[in-house]
Amino acid sequence: MLFRTLNRNDIVALALMPLLLIGFWINTLLFDQSPSFPYDHNPMPLWDLVIGVLKSNHLLASVISLLIALIMMFSVNRVVNRYNLFNGQTNLPGFIYMLLVSAYLMAQKLHPVWFFTPLLILAIERLFSAAGQRKAMTWCFEASFALSLGTLFYAKGIYFMAFLWMIMFILRLLTIRSFMASIIGLALPYLFSFAYYFWFDQADVFLETVVENFISPIAFFNHTIYSQIYNGFIIFLVFVSILSVVRILPAIKIITRKHYRIFIWLIVLCVVAAITPYYSLEVMPIWAIGTSIVLGRFLSLIRRRFIQELILFIIVAITIAGQFLI
Image (cartoon, rainbow, N blue to C red):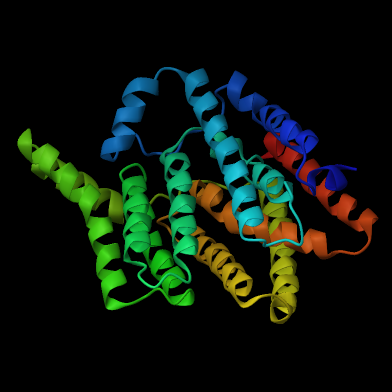
């Protein structure tokens, strides 16, 4: 019943998703037990503004992370439905996104990646909109500007600029002019920030903060037995989903094929990043973008309704268990 309810775009599914999200977020809203990500010691400029307001208000910070997660759920659904990535209108990918970011209570807490992620998906959408345009410079500039703005919250998001260039290449937007436009968009937020700090005679502080955030390692999470089991199951499911989607690529439209390749690459890049010392669980909201779309498509391809419901039920069950065992 859950798969059937969510695999359509109607008022019942739309109303159900925020209620389910609040249910998964209830531990984070009521209790402050999980450790925080170590971003507060030397924060990027925009994140510094956020923690200055919310540092002592756990409830408000948790509500904001919940609202951003809700925005991301609907954003994922909008991308899927706008670009016809499934056979029909659906709310399933947004629900899967919610599950993927809910198992780790630590990932639910407000951290800079939550502010970076909506700007990343906005950048992806801008490049998708540029496909087929004769002069794509404006869209490439806007995409890189959005991503760069997000890196003033989450510095290591700067490395996802390579992902935007990959999108530009896949969608055949990459020219000398569009590349230069993306460089300008990437540089402008930093030029504005540098000018601000320079005006107050703190340019050296800004440069030291940026460099340290770009290169400092972040990995600190020690996995439990259950978290290893959870990760293994999800990775296996994602691997099967990728194989299933790749198998149907020759039968779908070329532009849709390119979109799926982009999201598969996003999954791969996030997994590779997560196993390095420079990233940790904070990439889950980013990784969940591509994973929710590919996994949702895999579930929709399964012909037996019982199997669809069973797999979705298992994901829900291990997500709930993860909140207590991880």
